[in-house]
Image 1: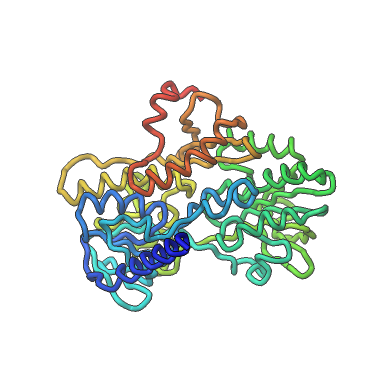
Image 2: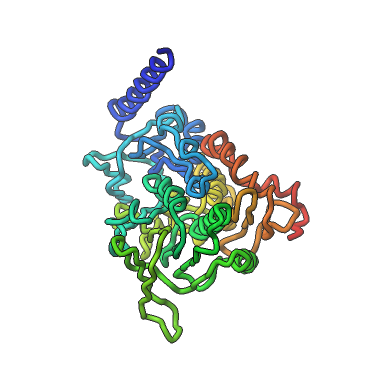
Length: 441
Protein backbone atom coordinates (compact mmCIF):
# COMPACT_ATOMS: atom_id res chain seq x y z
CA UNK A 1 0.00 0.00 0.00
CA UNK A 2 2.77 2.41 1.02
CA UNK A 3 4.90 1.39 -1.98
CA UNK A 4 1.94 1.93 -4.30
CA UNK A 5 1.30 5.37 -2.84
CA UNK A 6 4.98 6.29 -3.16
CA UNK A 7 5.06 5.13 -6.79
CA UNK A 8 1.93 7.17 -7.53
CA UNK A 9 3.42 10.27 -5.90
CA UNK A 10 6.71 9.79 -7.80
CA UNK A 11 4.81 9.44 -11.07
CA UNK A 12 2.86 12.59 -10.29
CA UNK A 13 6.06 14.51 -9.55
CA UNK A 14 7.61 13.40 -12.84
CA UNK A 15 4.46 14.33 -14.74
CA UNK A 16 4.42 17.75 -13.05
CA UNK A 17 8.11 18.27 -13.87
CA UNK A 18 7.42 17.39 -17.48
CA UNK A 19 4.45 19.77 -17.64
CA UNK A 20 6.38 22.63 -16.09
CA UNK A 21 9.41 21.99 -18.31
CA UNK A 22 7.70 23.72 -21.23
CA UNK A 23 4.43 25.26 -20.03
CA UNK A 24 5.98 28.46 -18.71
CA UNK A 25 9.28 28.35 -20.57
CA UNK A 26 10.58 31.66 -21.92
CA UNK A 27 11.66 31.84 -25.55
CA UNK A 28 15.09 33.42 -25.07
CA UNK A 29 18.16 32.23 -23.15
CA UNK A 30 21.76 33.17 -22.58
CA UNK A 31 22.70 29.60 -23.56
CA UNK A 32 20.78 26.87 -25.32
CA UNK A 33 22.08 23.29 -25.26
CA UNK A 34 20.62 21.00 -27.91
CA UNK A 35 20.76 17.50 -26.47
CA UNK A 36 20.29 16.02 -23.01
CA UNK A 37 22.55 13.01 -23.39
CA UNK A 38 25.89 12.50 -21.67
CA UNK A 39 27.63 15.31 -23.55
CA UNK A 40 24.80 17.80 -23.22
CA UNK A 41 24.33 17.27 -19.50
CA UNK A 42 28.08 17.35 -18.80
CA UNK A 43 28.19 20.93 -20.08
CA UNK A 44 24.74 22.19 -19.09
CA UNK A 45 25.16 21.15 -15.44
CA UNK A 46 28.22 23.32 -14.92
CA UNK A 47 27.15 26.20 -17.14
CA UNK A 48 23.67 26.49 -15.65
CA UNK A 49 25.31 26.87 -12.23
CA UNK A 50 27.78 29.45 -13.51
CA UNK A 51 25.26 31.50 -15.52
CA UNK A 52 22.38 31.29 -13.06
CA UNK A 53 18.92 29.81 -12.86
CA UNK A 54 16.82 30.29 -15.99
CA UNK A 55 19.74 31.34 -18.18
CA UNK A 56 20.29 27.90 -19.74
CA UNK A 57 17.82 25.75 -21.66
CA UNK A 58 18.30 22.08 -22.53
CA UNK A 59 16.37 20.86 -25.56
CA UNK A 60 15.80 17.11 -25.20
CA UNK A 61 12.71 15.16 -26.40
CA UNK A 62 13.34 11.88 -24.59
CA UNK A 63 11.65 11.29 -21.24
CA UNK A 64 14.28 8.65 -20.39
CA UNK A 65 18.03 9.13 -20.15
CA UNK A 66 20.07 6.01 -20.95
CA UNK A 67 23.58 5.21 -19.86
CA UNK A 68 24.42 3.59 -23.17
CA UNK A 69 27.89 2.22 -22.28
CA UNK A 70 26.14 -0.41 -20.15
CA UNK A 71 24.11 -1.79 -23.06
CA UNK A 72 26.84 -4.28 -24.01
CA UNK A 73 26.73 -5.74 -20.50
CA UNK A 74 22.94 -6.04 -20.72
CA UNK A 75 23.16 -7.76 -24.09
CA UNK A 76 25.71 -10.18 -22.68
CA UNK A 77 23.60 -10.98 -19.63
CA UNK A 78 26.00 -9.31 -17.19
CA UNK A 79 23.86 -6.34 -16.15
CA UNK A 80 20.16 -5.65 -15.65
CA UNK A 81 18.46 -3.26 -18.08
CA UNK A 82 16.91 -1.34 -15.19
CA UNK A 83 20.38 -0.14 -14.20
CA UNK A 84 20.86 1.66 -17.53
CA UNK A 85 18.26 4.42 -17.34
CA UNK A 86 16.64 7.13 -15.25
CA UNK A 87 13.91 9.71 -15.94
CA UNK A 88 15.24 12.74 -17.79
CA UNK A 89 13.55 14.92 -15.18
CA UNK A 90 15.94 13.53 -12.58
CA UNK A 91 19.16 14.22 -14.50
CA UNK A 92 18.56 17.62 -16.12
CA UNK A 93 20.25 20.20 -13.85
CA UNK A 94 17.73 22.02 -11.63
CA UNK A 95 19.07 25.44 -12.62
CA UNK A 96 18.36 24.75 -16.32
CA UNK A 97 15.07 24.86 -18.20
CA UNK A 98 14.23 21.52 -19.80
CA UNK A 99 12.43 21.92 -23.12
CA UNK A 100 11.08 18.45 -23.84
CA UNK A 101 10.80 18.70 -27.60
CA UNK A 102 12.99 17.76 -30.51
CA UNK A 103 14.94 20.40 -32.38
CA UNK A 104 13.78 20.76 -35.99
CA UNK A 105 16.10 23.47 -37.32
CA UNK A 106 19.00 25.69 -36.33
CA UNK A 107 19.38 29.15 -37.85
CA UNK A 108 22.82 30.49 -36.88
CA UNK A 109 22.15 33.81 -38.61
CA UNK A 110 19.05 34.51 -36.51
CA UNK A 111 20.42 32.76 -33.40
CA UNK A 112 17.34 30.57 -33.11
CA UNK A 113 16.44 26.91 -32.73
CA UNK A 114 13.10 25.84 -34.17
CA UNK A 115 11.33 23.13 -32.19
CA UNK A 116 9.20 20.26 -33.45
CA UNK A 117 5.99 22.21 -32.77
CA UNK A 118 7.21 25.12 -34.88
CA UNK A 119 8.00 27.47 -32.01
CA UNK A 120 11.40 29.16 -31.83
CA UNK A 121 13.91 29.50 -29.03
CA UNK A 122 16.54 32.22 -29.30
CA UNK A 123 20.01 32.17 -27.81
CA UNK A 124 23.14 34.23 -27.30
CA UNK A 125 25.28 31.10 -27.26
CA UNK A 126 24.54 27.61 -28.53
CA UNK A 127 26.01 24.20 -27.74
CA UNK A 128 25.01 21.35 -30.03
CA UNK A 129 25.28 17.94 -28.35
CA UNK A 130 22.50 16.08 -30.11
CA UNK A 131 24.23 12.73 -30.60
CA UNK A 132 23.95 10.63 -33.74
CA UNK A 133 20.95 8.89 -35.32
CA UNK A 134 20.62 5.11 -35.60
CA UNK A 135 19.68 4.28 -39.19
CA UNK A 136 18.05 0.85 -39.10
CA UNK A 137 16.46 1.73 -42.44
CA UNK A 138 19.89 1.92 -44.04
CA UNK A 139 20.01 -1.88 -44.35
CA UNK A 140 17.41 -3.55 -46.54
CA UNK A 141 14.99 -5.67 -44.55
CA UNK A 142 16.42 -4.77 -41.15
CA UNK A 143 13.55 -2.62 -39.89
CA UNK A 144 11.12 -5.43 -40.66
CA UNK A 145 13.05 -8.11 -38.79
CA UNK A 146 14.94 -6.40 -35.95
CA UNK A 147 13.77 -7.76 -32.61
CA UNK A 148 12.65 -11.08 -34.08
CA UNK A 149 13.99 -13.90 -36.25
CA UNK A 150 17.15 -13.99 -34.14
CA UNK A 151 18.13 -10.39 -35.00
CA UNK A 152 19.06 -7.98 -32.20
CA UNK A 153 21.13 -4.88 -31.52
CA UNK A 154 22.78 -3.57 -28.36
CA UNK A 155 22.62 -0.05 -29.78
CA UNK A 156 18.92 0.43 -29.10
CA UNK A 157 17.13 0.31 -25.73
CA UNK A 158 14.23 -1.23 -27.64
CA UNK A 159 16.24 -4.26 -28.76
CA UNK A 160 19.17 -4.66 -26.35
CA UNK A 161 17.36 -7.18 -24.15
CA UNK A 162 16.61 -9.26 -27.23
CA UNK A 163 20.33 -9.88 -27.63
CA UNK A 164 20.64 -12.01 -24.51
CA UNK A 165 17.26 -13.62 -25.12
CA UNK A 166 18.18 -14.73 -28.63
CA UNK A 167 21.70 -15.81 -27.64
CA UNK A 168 20.19 -18.17 -25.08
CA UNK A 169 18.06 -19.73 -27.83
CA UNK A 170 21.08 -20.68 -29.96
CA UNK A 171 21.85 -24.38 -30.12
CA UNK A 172 24.12 -24.38 -33.16
CA UNK A 173 24.75 -22.73 -36.55
CA UNK A 174 26.20 -19.34 -37.40
CA UNK A 175 26.28 -16.41 -34.98
CA UNK A 176 27.06 -13.21 -36.90
CA UNK A 177 28.18 -9.81 -35.59
CA UNK A 178 28.46 -6.74 -37.80
CA UNK A 179 30.20 -3.35 -37.99
CA UNK A 180 29.05 -0.81 -40.64
CA UNK A 181 31.05 1.51 -42.87
CA UNK A 182 29.61 4.73 -41.43
CA UNK A 183 30.90 6.64 -38.41
CA UNK A 184 29.29 5.16 -35.28
CA UNK A 185 29.30 5.71 -31.55
CA UNK A 186 31.34 3.31 -29.42
CA UNK A 187 33.15 1.61 -32.26
CA UNK A 188 34.28 -1.26 -30.04
CA UNK A 189 30.78 -2.43 -29.14
CA UNK A 190 30.18 -4.42 -32.36
CA UNK A 191 32.92 -6.89 -31.45
CA UNK A 192 32.50 -6.89 -27.66
CA UNK A 193 29.25 -8.81 -27.86
CA UNK A 194 30.92 -11.47 -30.01
CA UNK A 195 33.33 -12.25 -27.16
CA UNK A 196 30.50 -12.37 -24.63
CA UNK A 197 28.54 -14.68 -26.92
CA UNK A 198 31.55 -16.98 -27.17
CA UNK A 199 31.75 -17.13 -23.39
CA UNK A 200 28.03 -17.82 -23.12
CA UNK A 201 28.17 -20.66 -25.67
CA UNK A 202 31.16 -22.23 -23.91
CA UNK A 203 29.32 -22.07 -20.60
CA UNK A 204 26.40 -23.91 -22.14
CA UNK A 205 28.67 -26.55 -23.68
CA UNK A 206 27.61 -25.78 -27.26
CA UNK A 207 30.60 -23.77 -28.55
CA UNK A 208 31.68 -26.56 -30.91
CA UNK A 209 28.26 -26.37 -32.54
CA UNK A 210 28.42 -22.63 -33.21
CA UNK A 211 30.51 -20.75 -35.77
CA UNK A 212 31.11 -17.13 -34.73
CA UNK A 213 31.79 -14.66 -37.52
CA UNK A 214 32.60 -10.98 -37.04
CA UNK A 215 32.02 -8.91 -40.17
CA UNK A 216 33.42 -5.39 -40.31
CA UNK A 217 33.22 -2.96 -43.22
CA UNK A 218 36.58 -1.57 -42.15
CA UNK A 219 40.04 -2.77 -43.06
CA UNK A 220 41.16 -3.67 -39.54
CA UNK A 221 39.58 -4.91 -36.32
CA UNK A 222 40.45 -1.74 -34.39
CA UNK A 223 41.76 1.65 -35.48
CA UNK A 224 44.83 1.76 -33.21
CA UNK A 225 47.49 -0.83 -34.01
CA UNK A 226 48.35 -1.69 -30.41
CA UNK A 227 44.76 -2.64 -29.64
CA UNK A 228 44.14 -4.13 -33.07
CA UNK A 229 46.94 -6.62 -32.38
CA UNK A 230 45.41 -7.41 -28.99
CA UNK A 231 41.91 -7.94 -30.36
CA UNK A 232 43.11 -10.07 -33.24
CA UNK A 233 44.84 -12.27 -30.69
CA UNK A 234 41.68 -12.49 -28.57
CA UNK A 235 39.56 -13.36 -31.60
CA UNK A 236 42.01 -16.03 -32.69
CA UNK A 237 42.15 -17.56 -29.22
CA UNK A 238 38.34 -17.76 -29.13
CA UNK A 239 38.07 -19.18 -32.66
CA UNK A 240 36.16 -16.11 -33.87
CA UNK A 241 36.45 -15.53 -37.61
CA UNK A 242 37.21 -11.89 -38.48
CA UNK A 243 36.03 -10.82 -41.94
CA UNK A 244 37.34 -7.42 -43.05
CA UNK A 245 35.76 -5.17 -45.70
CA UNK A 246 32.34 -6.83 -45.38
CA UNK A 247 29.41 -4.43 -45.05
CA UNK A 248 25.94 -5.73 -44.15
CA UNK A 249 23.49 -4.57 -46.84
CA UNK A 250 20.45 -6.83 -46.45
CA UNK A 251 18.73 -9.06 -43.89
CA UNK A 252 16.14 -11.67 -44.85
CA UNK A 253 14.57 -12.50 -41.50
CA UNK A 254 12.20 -15.16 -42.76
CA UNK A 255 15.02 -17.08 -44.41
CA UNK A 256 17.54 -16.15 -41.69
CA UNK A 257 20.05 -14.92 -44.24
CA UNK A 258 22.42 -11.94 -44.10
CA UNK A 259 23.96 -10.42 -47.22
CA UNK A 260 27.24 -8.52 -47.21
CA UNK A 261 28.87 -6.34 -49.82
CA UNK A 262 32.62 -6.77 -50.17
CA UNK A 263 34.41 -3.42 -49.96
CA UNK A 264 38.03 -2.45 -50.49
CA UNK A 265 40.13 -2.98 -53.60
CA UNK A 266 40.59 -6.74 -53.55
CA UNK A 267 39.62 -9.14 -56.35
CA UNK A 268 36.13 -9.68 -54.85
CA UNK A 269 35.37 -6.00 -54.21
CA UNK A 270 31.83 -5.15 -55.23
CA UNK A 271 30.56 -8.70 -54.92
CA UNK A 272 27.93 -9.78 -52.40
CA UNK A 273 28.09 -12.73 -50.05
CA UNK A 274 25.02 -14.28 -48.39
CA UNK A 275 25.43 -16.12 -45.08
CA UNK A 276 22.80 -18.12 -43.17
CA UNK A 277 22.53 -17.31 -39.50
CA UNK A 278 20.98 -18.56 -36.30
CA UNK A 279 21.77 -15.33 -34.46
CA UNK A 280 22.57 -11.91 -35.91
CA UNK A 281 23.76 -8.90 -33.92
CA UNK A 282 23.55 -5.78 -36.07
CA UNK A 283 25.32 -2.51 -35.49
CA UNK A 284 23.18 -0.21 -37.64
CA UNK A 285 24.69 2.44 -39.86
CA UNK A 286 24.46 5.87 -38.26
CA UNK A 287 24.06 9.39 -39.58
CA UNK A 288 23.80 13.01 -38.45
CA UNK A 289 20.31 14.21 -37.59
CA UNK A 290 18.61 15.98 -40.50
CA UNK A 291 18.11 19.22 -38.56
CA UNK A 292 21.90 19.47 -38.28
CA UNK A 293 22.79 18.09 -41.69
CA UNK A 294 20.43 20.50 -43.45
CA UNK A 295 21.53 23.57 -41.48
CA UNK A 296 24.31 26.09 -42.06
CA UNK A 297 26.30 24.79 -39.08
CA UNK A 298 27.08 21.43 -40.74
CA UNK A 299 30.13 20.41 -42.71
CA UNK A 300 29.92 18.44 -45.96
CA UNK A 301 29.44 15.18 -44.03
CA UNK A 302 26.56 16.60 -42.00
CA UNK A 303 28.32 16.99 -38.65
CA UNK A 304 28.63 20.27 -36.72
CA UNK A 305 31.70 21.96 -38.17
CA UNK A 306 33.95 22.86 -35.24
CA UNK A 307 37.63 23.47 -34.61
CA UNK A 308 39.04 20.14 -33.48
CA UNK A 309 41.02 21.70 -30.66
CA UNK A 310 38.79 24.47 -29.25
CA UNK A 311 35.37 22.94 -30.14
CA UNK A 312 34.21 26.37 -31.36
CA UNK A 313 32.34 26.54 -34.64
CA UNK A 314 34.50 27.30 -37.65
CA UNK A 315 32.22 30.14 -38.85
CA UNK A 316 29.86 31.08 -35.99
CA UNK A 317 31.85 32.10 -32.92
CA UNK A 318 28.89 31.82 -30.52
CA UNK A 319 28.32 28.14 -31.36
CA UNK A 320 30.15 25.12 -29.93
CA UNK A 321 29.66 21.38 -30.29
CA UNK A 322 30.87 18.17 -28.67
CA UNK A 323 30.09 14.50 -28.67
CA UNK A 324 28.75 12.32 -31.45
CA UNK A 325 27.20 15.09 -33.58
CA UNK A 326 30.43 17.09 -33.82
CA UNK A 327 33.00 16.94 -36.61
CA UNK A 328 35.80 16.10 -34.15
CA UNK A 329 37.92 13.40 -35.85
CA UNK A 330 38.11 10.99 -32.94
CA UNK A 331 36.19 7.93 -31.78
CA UNK A 332 32.68 8.84 -30.61
CA UNK A 333 32.47 7.70 -26.98
CA UNK A 334 31.25 8.94 -23.60
CA UNK A 335 34.89 9.13 -22.53
CA UNK A 336 35.64 11.48 -25.40
CA UNK A 337 32.61 13.61 -24.53
CA UNK A 338 33.80 13.91 -20.92
CA UNK A 339 37.22 15.19 -21.99
CA UNK A 340 35.67 17.50 -24.57
CA UNK A 341 33.25 18.95 -22.03
CA UNK A 342 35.97 20.37 -19.81
CA UNK A 343 37.64 22.12 -22.76
CA UNK A 344 34.37 23.48 -24.12
CA UNK A 345 33.17 24.84 -20.79
CA UNK A 346 36.42 26.67 -20.16
CA UNK A 347 36.53 28.22 -23.62
CA UNK A 348 32.87 29.26 -23.64
CA UNK A 349 33.00 30.81 -20.17
CA UNK A 350 36.12 32.76 -21.11
CA UNK A 351 34.34 34.02 -24.21
CA UNK A 352 31.23 35.05 -22.26
CA UNK A 353 33.34 36.86 -19.66
CA UNK A 354 35.52 38.50 -22.30
CA UNK A 355 38.72 36.97 -20.93
CA UNK A 356 41.55 37.32 -23.42
CA UNK A 357 43.41 34.10 -22.66
CA UNK A 358 44.76 31.28 -24.83
CA UNK A 359 42.05 28.77 -25.66
CA UNK A 360 42.02 25.41 -23.93
CA UNK A 361 42.67 22.59 -26.39
CA UNK A 362 41.25 19.09 -26.74
CA UNK A 363 43.85 16.50 -27.73
CA UNK A 364 41.54 13.88 -29.22
CA UNK A 365 41.44 11.68 -26.11
CA UNK A 366 38.94 8.85 -26.20
CA UNK A 367 38.52 5.44 -24.64
CA UNK A 368 36.93 2.19 -25.70
CA UNK A 369 36.72 -0.47 -22.97
CA UNK A 370 36.66 -3.76 -24.90
CA UNK A 371 34.98 -6.32 -22.67
CA UNK A 372 36.10 -9.81 -23.68
CA UNK A 373 34.34 -11.84 -20.99
CA UNK A 374 33.12 -11.75 -17.43
CA UNK A 375 35.94 -10.10 -15.43
CA UNK A 376 38.07 -9.63 -18.57
CA UNK A 377 38.54 -6.41 -20.50
CA UNK A 378 41.04 -4.62 -22.74
CA UNK A 379 41.00 -0.93 -21.80
CA UNK A 380 41.84 0.97 -24.98
CA UNK A 381 42.70 4.63 -24.37
CA UNK A 382 44.16 6.75 -27.13
CA UNK A 383 44.09 9.99 -29.05
CA UNK A 384 41.92 9.80 -32.12
CA UNK A 385 43.99 12.63 -33.59
CA UNK A 386 47.34 10.86 -33.43
CA UNK A 387 46.37 7.20 -33.11
CA UNK A 388 48.73 6.92 -30.15
CA UNK A 389 47.80 5.11 -26.92
CA UNK A 390 47.07 7.46 -24.03
CA UNK A 391 46.74 5.08 -21.11
CA UNK A 392 45.81 6.07 -17.57
CA UNK A 393 47.43 3.20 -15.68
CA UNK A 394 50.97 1.86 -15.41
CA UNK A 395 50.15 -1.66 -16.67
CA UNK A 396 49.74 -2.61 -20.32
CA UNK A 397 46.05 -1.94 -20.93
CA UNK A 398 46.08 -3.95 -24.15
CA UNK A 399 46.12 -7.07 -21.97
CA UNK A 400 42.85 -8.52 -20.65
CA UNK A 401 42.58 -7.51 -17.03
CA UNK A 402 40.09 -8.02 -14.19
CA UNK A 403 40.82 -4.53 -12.82
CA UNK A 404 39.86 -2.97 -16.15
CA UNK A 405 36.62 -4.95 -16.10
CA UNK A 406 35.76 -3.79 -12.56
CA UNK A 407 36.57 -0.21 -13.49
CA UNK A 408 34.27 -0.29 -16.53
CA UNK A 409 31.43 -2.45 -15.21
CA UNK A 410 31.17 -1.12 -11.66
CA UNK A 411 33.07 2.12 -11.04
CA UNK A 412 32.50 4.08 -14.26
CA UNK A 413 28.70 3.75 -14.09
CA UNK A 414 28.82 5.42 -10.68
CA UNK A 415 31.08 8.16 -12.05
CA UNK A 416 28.68 8.60 -14.95
CA UNK A 417 25.58 9.21 -12.81
CA UNK A 418 27.20 11.01 -9.90
CA UNK A 419 29.92 13.05 -11.61
CA UNK A 420 29.85 13.24 -15.41
CA UNK A 421 26.19 14.23 -15.63
CA UNK A 422 26.82 16.71 -12.81
CA UNK A 423 29.60 18.35 -14.81
CA UNK A 424 32.40 17.36 -12.44
CA UNK A 425 34.10 14.61 -14.48
CA UNK A 426 36.29 15.72 -17.35
CA UNK A 427 38.14 12.48 -17.91
CA UNK A 428 41.08 10.73 -16.21
CA UNK A 429 43.87 13.20 -16.97
CA UNK A 430 44.43 14.06 -13.30
CA UNK A 431 44.44 10.37 -12.35
CA UNK A 432 46.92 9.62 -15.12
CA UNK A 433 49.45 11.99 -13.56
CA UNK A 434 49.51 9.76 -10.49
CA UNK A 435 48.79 6.30 -11.88
CA UNK A 436 51.02 6.52 -14.96
CA UNK A 437 53.26 9.58 -14.55
CA UNK A 438 55.99 8.28 -16.83
CA UNK A 439 53.59 7.18 -19.60
CA UNK A 440 55.16 3.75 -19.23
CA UNK A 441 53.01 2.15 -21.93
